[in-house]
Amino acid sequence: MIDNKNPLPLYHQLANIIRKKIEQGLYKEGDKIPSERTFKEQFKLSRVTVNKAINLLIEDGFLIRKRGQGTFIANSNINFFPGLLGFTEIIKNKNMVPSSRVILKKIISPNKLLCEKLKVSKTDKIMFTERVRLADNKIINLEKSYIPLKLCENLLNIDLSTHSIYKELSKEGYKPSMATQEIKAILSDEEISKYLKISLNEAILKNTRITFSKDIPIQYSINYYIGDVYSIIMSIDN
Image (cartoon, rainbow, N blue to C red):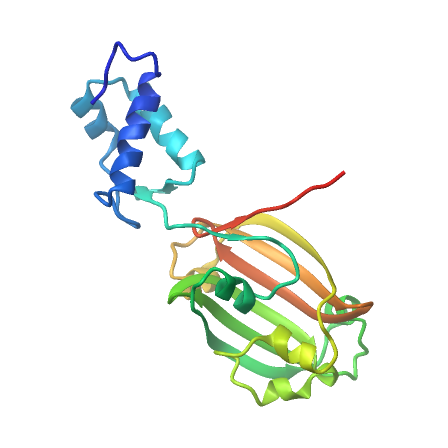
């Protein structure tokens, strides 16, 4: 309960109460929490105090606010270190089961952008894949991937719902050794919302990446991550 004699600020006390209910499983992932008005009346607090408690829990990753719907218990985040492991390897390292739903897999001719990013000519062929990636059957991201077919024609024959693209490229001598990427926050459009099963215009992360094997570009990919199940951990050295 809230203790007015406790030196801890009232909004911190309320945040701790809500956090404890989450940790005890009284509020479960995806549940909508009571309204701010309900907390205000239950604990005899001001609306400002309740709002500060909710915002604190959002900042700490326990809650997520959805426009026009309310505030919900956030899903447990999957933390990614932006190194050179593929999705499959990252998820396995977290003792979870990776899987994919293949939406599209086809051969295309490169446009000007792909020629630039992958250092290929207009006569080269590109394998384009579109997949929904999952961990323990929980949707994590939508991946669009472009790979020069000449690097690994075997990709045409394997089941990409269970196989790792990076692993297949490594078998052909193109082990990932470097990558450049850009990560930014965007709002989901109709296509992304459909495949990620989220609301339209929901905040997500877009990761655009070029992966190299030595100095050879081996993959250009665009990944769209659900904002409340994905976070990035980085290590910075002097």
